[in-house]
Image 1 (cartoon, rainbow, N blue to C red):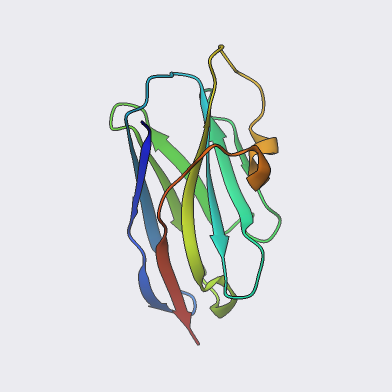
Image 2 (cartoon, rainbow, N blue to C red; image 1 turned 120 degrees about the vertical axis):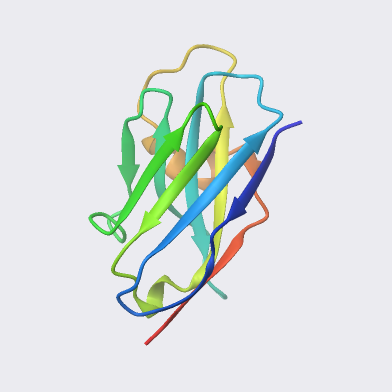
Length: 130
């Protein structure tokens, strides 16, 4: 069974930076799309960034240029580097994944949509103060 565990959340002032990590375990597939989502109170869960087996990344417009997704295959870990944080970035941040039974080398853009995700982490809170 796949388990995704996030870490690295916390409190930071506006303009600051944080790096989130997501370690995967129980993964048997080498073909996947990994993504980061966030959800603020009273709002829909929003896809932020995704990355696939080929390292091609996709970003939501709201974070493009400020957030960077990356991964370390050996450590089975995905990262989200967040810079120039704003109070409106305050939310619970979730790691997510879709694993494939076949060799998938296409774009992971579709996996910014929560309906296409099949595995979720428990989340890590990010709070940005002004």
